[in-house]
Structures are given as C-alpha cells and as structure tokens.
Length: 254
Ligand SMILES: [Zn+2]
Image 1 (cartoon, rainbow, N blue to C red):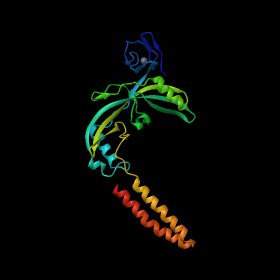
Image 2: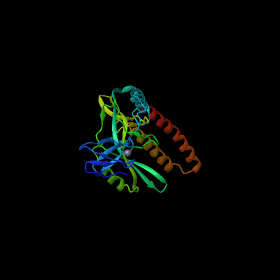
Image 3: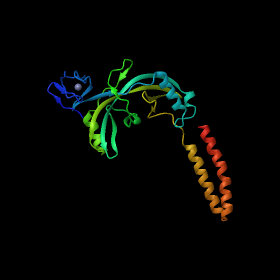
Image 4: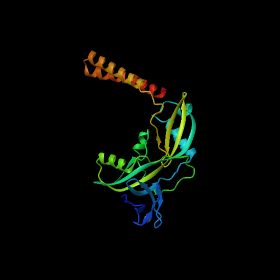
C-alpha cells in the first residue's frame, strides 16, 4: 500500500520508519531497512526493477527470431537492417489484487506508450528486485502518469482493491530497423526476450482471403450442380486438395 506523505517527510512502506524528504525528490532509500521507494504525488510506494537478463546481442537474436516468425512479412529477418539497439527502462505501476482465485498482479503504464503490449505487460513471477539505477541505460523513461490515474484505470477494470502498490522499472532494448526504406521500432523485453511492436511489416492477408473466396465459390457451385450425396462428397474432396495446395503455396510465398 502507498503510505502517506508528511510535511517534508515520508513513512517507509516496508518498515514504517520515518524519513526526511527534499522537495522534488522522487527516488528514496529507507535508512532503517534499505527499502527502495518512489515518491508519487499521492504517497510513497515500493520501487522495484526486473533484472536485465538479456544483453544487446541476445536482444538482437530475439528480434531476428521474431522477424523470421509467422506474424511478419516473409524474409523480414534477412531483408531488414538493424540500425540501433539501445538499453532503456520503462516504468509501470504494479497492483497486487486479492481476487477470488487468490492474489493477482496487474500492471498499468506509468508513462505514455504507443506499444500496446507494453500497456498490457505480463510481469514474470518472482523476479522483482529492489530498484537500482542501471549504468548502461541510455534512457530512463520518466514517470509522467501519476499513481491516481493508474489506480483509476484499475478501478474501471473492476478487478478489486489493491493490497499492494509499487513502481516497477522494466528493462528493455529499443531496436530500430529498416525494411524497404522504412524505419521501424520494436522493443525487446530484456527480462524474457519477448518482442513488442505496434507497427511492423506484416504478412499480407489478402491472398489468403482470395483462396478462401475461391473455395467458397467452388463448393457452392458444386453443391448446386450435384445432387447425389456420394458424388458430392467425392467432388468436394477432389476440389479441396488443390485448394489446400494453393493455400500452402501462398503461405510459403508471402
Ligand atoms: Zn524502511
């Protein structure tokens, strides 16, 4: 739970000890229990981070695997050039909620983001560690969304009351790459290797729709033309095989 702010002082969320607060100070360490704390407008909360388990090379490898996967356009991994891989951190509000099936953790972003997966981040279990600034981070995203705003979003989702609130810094690799003279942005979660992106060269869907439309057309014509059930079955089967081959060829091609 967030503890209250006092006149030029604060109460530690972990041990209840009181300390002084300088105006404008946002990051604190409790002098009694060494807890790392964050000062929000509405109170003081625990401050954690996830460990940066992936280095830049591993992040790049994770990005290449994602590029070679099924969501992106064919050969994106070989046709795109990775231009920059930078260490950044991104803050999220953590809410521990007592639900019917036990305790659940929910995340709300503490800064604006255009990456939908970041706003809907799934926190890996049991990895939180006390916050400590990373040396190599080129950009720590500032916490510009206040706790009250995030708490409001949580209430709208009607998930229950939070029993613990904290700020968590997510370690990310910000990757810029180019494909066909266009520049793209992807984030690699440095804790799990998951790739997050809002805009990327996607696999074209229209050829699949054409194959599906052709199939519907052929089956409909056959259905109307043939009345004998056994003959209908055989004709459907004979039509389905080239359609499946065509679908397979399309999948390989794009
Ligand atoms: Zn303390």
